[in-house]
Length: 218
Image 1 (tube, one colour):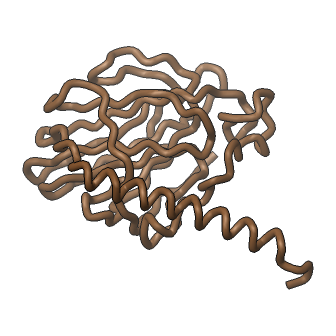
Image 2 (cartoon, helix red, strand yellow):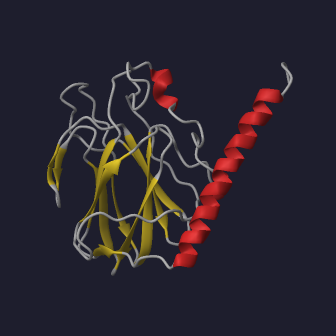
Image 3 (spheres, helix red, strand yellow):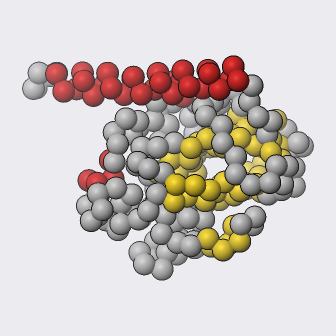
């Protein structure tokens, strides 16, 4: 099934890093606990050049830092942002590796030229896209919990669009000759990120409440 690659605008959120600091490439891995989770990963580009971002957890594969990654994770999407919050690109599919159970190639891949600077990616599960034009505008599935249950898999979460049961595991690698680990944000930056995420969740709750109370036919 084909899905889309699109552009928009957003603002920074939580910082997390897994792997060796300063390594090229960088690797991030972990586990979602709910379909509407987000994970934010920071990195730097020290000189203009091509940067590739690829997930390995849906169909499995060989992470350039971690080595072999087992298949079985959820269908991932991600946004690539500048440090100031401008959304550069959204990764959705693009990798060619096929999952041995589903036969689908749902891992995300983006390769593009970036200028020097700090960036971050926001990892989500399909189809939880940034709404734009800012991060405060929210994501399409913010606050909806295990929204993939509507896809019909037996476990009621981490379902792919074809109804296969998956897990919450993810793996993302960022590579390029000028890629490096980004500095750890200052405590004040963490506070601002937390406020932004709280605002997104509140916006989603207000939207759902308004929709629930709107008279039929309006």
